[in-house]
Image 1 (cartoon, rainbow, N blue to C red):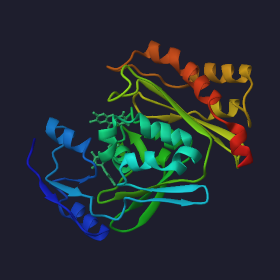
Image 2: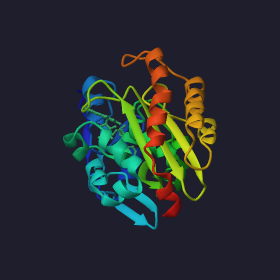
Image 3: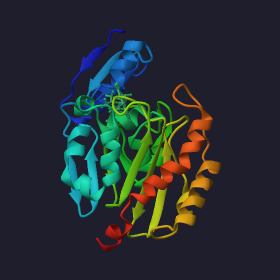
Image 4: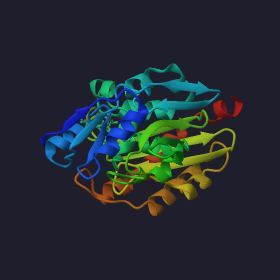
Length: 283
Ligand SMILES: Cc1cc2nc3c(=O)[nH]c(=O)nc-3n(C[C@H](O)[C@H](O)[C@H](O)COP(=O)(O)OP(=O)(O)OC[C@H]3O[C@@H](n4cnc5c(N)ncnc54)[C@H](O)[C@@H]3O)c2cc1C
């Protein structure tokens, strides 16, 4: 592990200034550390300065009507424990529950998951299907981006130097589901995963696929094929076949292309069938 200076700012302004002050030698924000500290230990990252976010007032969860704003440093376990998340955003609950283990979720955060931007992230596909946005704060301005625009590829995001993720906003409660395939049930990483959500206000579906490189993706044509209510069995089968054709399936050390291709339609069918569309329409 390379040596680094650890700073623990008490304000957002101080955190941004600390990140900027080490330009040239490299700095990194630290939330739960479940990704960053392993990266430093393995030599994949070598920041000269690590800026801890633990004193910032971002361990928050705010509901306004059906919209949810999640502070970036809130431990995933608190998100999972919120009864509103379980009832109003069941797919998000399932995605959070899929991350690592209980012990890991007591430390890991949503900001860190997006900051790492792993191809196998369990949260990113679900946030895509929920049309979530990220609120960023930086040296000169604040801005809001869709998660789709924020995530670029593995370890690559739209974050500018000195910028931090302050929060993640989910615009409305949605009947939703997240299903995944992995070798072990806990402390493992999804080989392929499908996130679906139904928007009661727009009467439309969203579908995202994750678990493989280069990054989780939305499948808008597949979602359109599901129609604007509960799809019939033939429509669902056709959507599954379309997903199998349209998604770019990659192989990596966790699964072959063939294995993933066979699973896409099955997982889509399982996810859509588990969503209670009527509940959303009448909410
Ligand atoms: C054993 C194990 C199992 C795992 N299983 C899963 C799994 O099943 N599913 C899954 O999705 N992930 C899994 N992970 C990965 C990891 O736990 C998650 O990605 C976690 O959400 C990262 O959050 P963190 O707070 O620990 O991030 P950190 O390690 O603190 O940070 C990760 C990255 O994000 C940056 N960052 C952190 N916070 C911010 C912020 N507010 N603004 C800007 N940048 C920021 C950091 O600089 C770093 O680059 C696993 C990890 C381990 C070690």
